[in-house]
Length: 233
Image 1: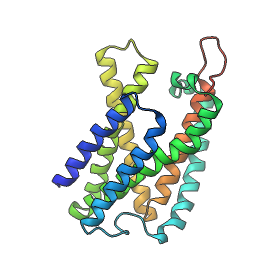
Image 2: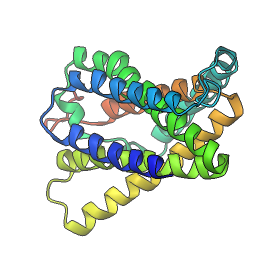
Image 3: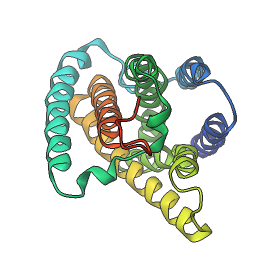
Image 4: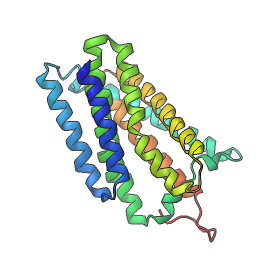
């Protein structure tokens, strides 16, 4: 248990500083992949099997089927949300007004899969979920890894506030950060359930990538520059 709690705390601190410090976005890919790889190595040295980490070949096929089906559902849900009056406001993000088209493609094809979806699933639904499962069972593993996943998003929440609500009060900022932690903890729980159902990480990786890509494209389509034109994201 000390290993798990210590890992969750270090991961939260690491990602918060990585996001908030003036580090080039390209650094996030090797940094997050390296962090995930190090954690997996530590888990293997502690005697964990590939199966307990969700990394067996047998899990790939069912994971891809589940991941594809749920990603299509997510796309339909996003389309429905954008059709509802006021729904587009939930996706608006001024950071996308500063992105060029090549930067958008980099985000969709490189950053989201390799700096976000893959390493985060290896860390939270792979290493932490697997280690917690061995020590305390799958229910506690789901809760612990999902809360850690929520805390991992403190840095991104602050970054989004800086870009979209620079004049927010302390209470407004605290509420927004707490809301992000709660929302991503819930998302982590859903991804953990998919990990259990598909017996591996392939499904969660596909869904994580799809949801982040869809919300990025959705934010680009709804965010407008001060002159009323579409954001160059």
